[in-house]
Image 1 (cartoon, rainbow over the protein chains, first blue to last red):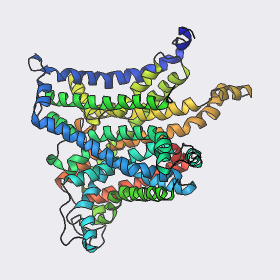
Image 2 (cartoon, helix red, strand yellow):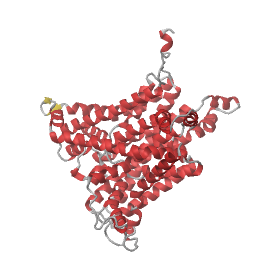
Image 3 (tube, each protein chain N blue to C red):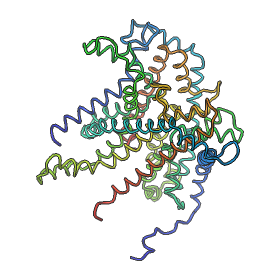
Image 4 (spheres, rainbow over the protein chains, first blue to last red):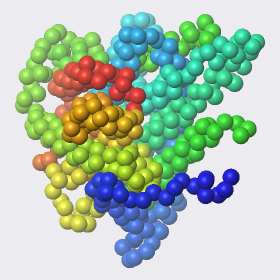
Length: 286
Length: 263
């Protein structure tokens, strides 16, 4: 094959191309330019060029702990959502007809309810005089109300609660399209259940898992509303440090440096997920 | 699939749904309580917290502002996004894959980073007006939702059908109206709806751009929760949940929920 056949024919701009310009210009000015300015201000101290912001963010034990804590929050939230959401997506894909629409709507509804309402409701669930303590007391599981709100366990549960649909829906949309005859064929050929799952079902569902994990992780690692409502200052995340640096401390260089670190994490996740999706799309051995 | 695996996955689905609905459903009984606290089970029955909504300072104003910003930004994003989507699908745009990725990228960006970047840039050019800052920011927030769905439905549309309609005697305008529009309308509606919700609910971007007099609903709600937490908030939340259910129901009638989610 000649080299020219491998490259797409050069695209010549025509009249329709102009239609892309308004949106492109808008995002260039209101989105890209501000981001570049943010990167610029992260290396700009009071007296010109300075890496002071990064030195503080990466050299201070407190900020390092905040970063580790955010990553930990992202990982635990993603792991918990995957553990519950993966099997749930299969059951949702298996449901038929009207039942599937209703079940789907019940998972979809929480996505459209305001995050403030959900975090507020989660507070009602966990309060000392809340529904969970009330239920456990009436069931005889506990004698006196347990303090749950403002604990790390409550934070993780609340985070999984907010981000779980972002895990279930991408996996569901892949599993729904899966050819269910393939695991059956493997069974006919004598494959054990474990072998069928690890060699047939799991690989086929991986594109959905990659999509769900990357979305959930990038949302959870940069979460602001849920941790600040459920934990306050007891559990600082990168987003909370950023908000504080900009709104309270007026220390823009610190905030910009932290924002750049968070941006780097987000871009790594997006690029990594795209690379994985590409690898999954190319059949092995070819 | 094996019987055990079926049981486990069905149980996981029920657990998922119960878990997801729990914080939403608890808000409703608390909004009818007589006591001024959120305790469960709620005491008695009263509508006093609903009556108090009117007296909450700035709440209705915030609701109006949020609806206004969400509707306007969705409209602008639809206009810009649709034009761009037509160019990307039908035209010969150099680097169209990169442009598409760029236009959808605000979705993957941490909200606070976008908010901070905009705050700084708008200060730099001297725009201190909260309303205009919010509108500009929310067009960036809504654009990816519109782009994704409109691009997807345009890409699926077979433009030969427009030619076929013209061969059968339709004028070009009529062919577009009767063939193209009904085909891409579901994509439009679901894209617009997602965009509206994303704007209406946004907290992390808006928090940097509001001022004392111009506050969006999520900001105002959180403020209220911090200053005077009482069941009025549960009443507002219940009404918001009711509104969401209504919108979802309408969308199911108009577009079909499953089609909407197959983004």
